[in-house]
Image 1 (spheres, protein in one colour):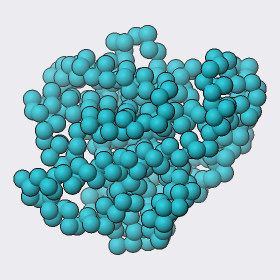
Image 2 (tube, rainbow, N blue to C red):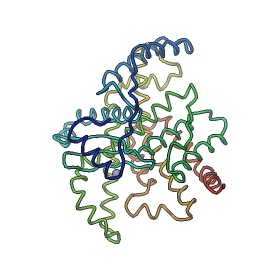
Image 3 (cartoon, helix red, strand yellow):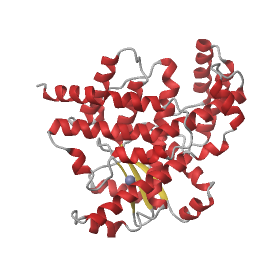
Image 4 (tube, helix red, strand yellow):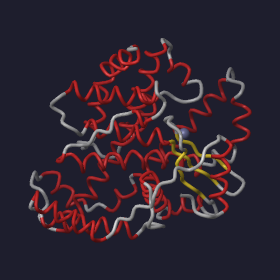
Length: 368
Ligand SMILES: [Zn+2]
């Protein structure tokens, strides 16, 4: 639910221009009793008291920072990422100065398509993330983190997610895979990291002033044959990627490198609360490092599947306004500050599946 302020009404106005209104759900409250029950179950299953202690602390912090206690899932996800990015902006003097006096509202754009955008309104800036994108990220990551021994099931699940988006145009028709127990945390961390990157990329446009020149760019972009305009738009995407990536990696500065070395070298799980804090912070940073790769591979999958379904080269159409995901990825990866990263394997796994998933999606779509 949007806050009852002017920017919130800009958000509602924009949605109504598309005949949309925000998704409304019954408020769900997570209370301390739920956390107690959850952690007790965890201890009973895994026998790790210190991890349960960590979870309790982390969840309490997450809930304590909620603006309102009533949250619907998409809202929770978006506001969580928004808080993290705002925090990263606030600790950097130059970004804090660029963001000063800028009112920003992050909200869901309730349609099934996979898109995100930032725009300027009369009262500030709106960062809008389409429902389809939120779902697709979750569907693909949960599938990759489910039982990985059965590749065919994995291919089918991802093909269903692609089909739901490209053919049925509603993520509700997509699969709802659940990560298997031991990969549930990995899945969640990777999901959150991808959402953080998407929102941080949009903040990147805002902080670099791209949105303020929006009207002008939109007019110029109409002349698609004009190459310098196209280059400018590509350049802006690269800039937004770069700023966004740096914002999502802000916590890297808070890592204790002695602990990092020890954690990376040890195969033993942490044994006390402080070790869990360090471990999870490191895991969050590693997920943030891998998030753009994952996002760009996902985009590549969509582009390939769309091209196959319609017998067109969708990539050529797209690149008239956007740089290809491949080159955005290369640019970021070449600057990646930290070589070790096991989360990158999920992006690689997805990349290997692009061809079979595309083929199966086409097969599904041709079925009567
Ligand atoms: Zn962009």
